[in-house]
Length: 141
Image (cartoon, rainbow, N blue to C red):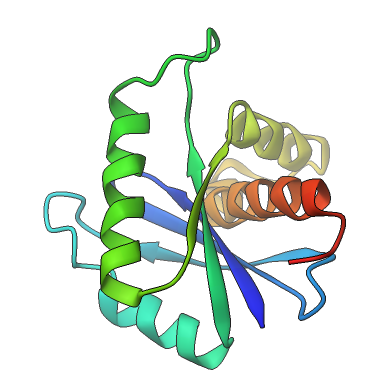
């Protein structure tokens, strides 16, 4: 069984998937959605969960640098709760502070154009969120 990692934004959800042993995370896709309509990503997410035999979901929790939870963090908490109820899978919130900035830095160092960066940044951030979670578990999911 695999773990899905999600980087949830107001317009996109970056998706990453672990290998079956829970060692590595790979960026999979970016889902475009409308945060105001919480179910708008359901069809694509359901397909990913089924095709990849996902047994757990890790949702990035964007905390403020002082550790407090702001508006984006609250939105991620709401979406995580929605996912638990919708898919009946364990959902873990994972501190994602600086993952998007780290992903941006990696892509800049790779000399990727702004247009190309925009297409991959969310799934790369999801991969970093998931990899951080997997590393904390030592490959045992």
